[in-house]
Amino acid sequence: PGWYRHITLAMLAHAFLAAMASAAIERGAAEMTQPTWPRSPWRRSGACWQLSAPGPRAAVPAH
Image (cartoon, rainbow, N blue to C red; front, side, top):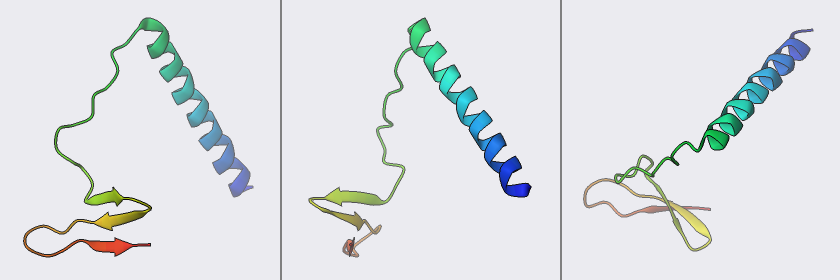
């Protein structure tokens, strides 16, 4: 029973958010712009993702 309650609430939340996004698009809401500073230390390089480390340390490839 817990699984069905969880899935039901998750689907209800998803439907609500989809409806809100659709209404915002119909109203002509401005699109969100990407922030000028990166929020994630992960960077895509070719077919790999790399974790960029702060300071003089090199990036660590993650495959």
